[in-house]
Image 1 (tube, helix red, strand yellow):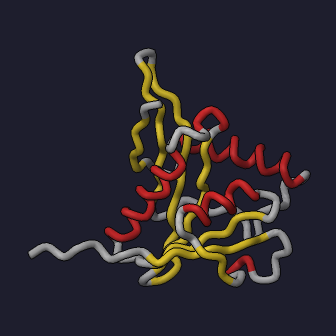
Image 2: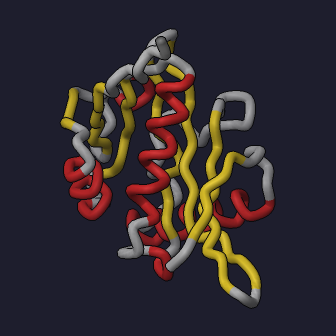
Length: 161
């Protein structure tokens, strides 16, 4: 599978469709629409939004997305990491995450945090495989019985001579 990953505005139609598909999948998994402590992020909160598109001879289809929300001067939070069922297993999820990590480093954010849910063991395994370590609940997730939080320290980009 061939794909491209590009930064797009939060309200990009393909990105909106991906976030709606993610929401529907999570609603089904949790049995309700009450599975996001602190509420959904808004355009004003998102600093980077990436969309992965599967490119074919007959056109292109959005298959994944991910976002960054700045937490403080040196850290950001991964939000809306999602890959469609058709794109899973293709390597696009790690590619999106690496692109988010690169975008964070370019902005001087050397710590990435994220929250995922207890009913998402596949996401938990993915983040652990990608080098994220479990941390105590933070911010909006404090006290949430359905949240698990993770963090990864990023290497600073090399300085040019």
